[in-house]
Length: 198
Image (cartoon, rainbow, N blue to C red):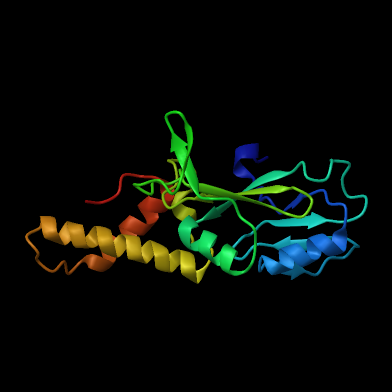
């Protein structure tokens, strides 16, 4: 018999409490989330690049509308913030943690997990945007690294290209013929939170 730590359990759906299904549907459609076909009366939406979905509808939860708080991970929170504003979605200012509490604006070093922004749906359910580019150690299995979208992979490649440029400078500016191996190692280690190649 398998042990529990050998059995895959993937988060599929989380429920959010809303008062008006049509109003919530309009909001999540404006966010650009895909509306999924469901076998029941619930509405289900999946954020672009996500494997997990949210659903809402009559009698699916006894939670108070507006009481949900979830995190949305993005690879570039500044770009996402600008896109939300351009789409007419109300979103709070970018902020990062400081020694005395939140500080407005992105983290000056753009460290992973640090910069955030918040938006709410019409019922007040909160979505926290969090920029994550390098996962904490152990958060991602090295055998299961992947990118949720073309834009996530492109952003990772840009970070790898920048880091590789520094690598070549340290090596006297010589062209690195093994750059594909270096990029591959960088991309996997960035996702798994391991020490990045130098």
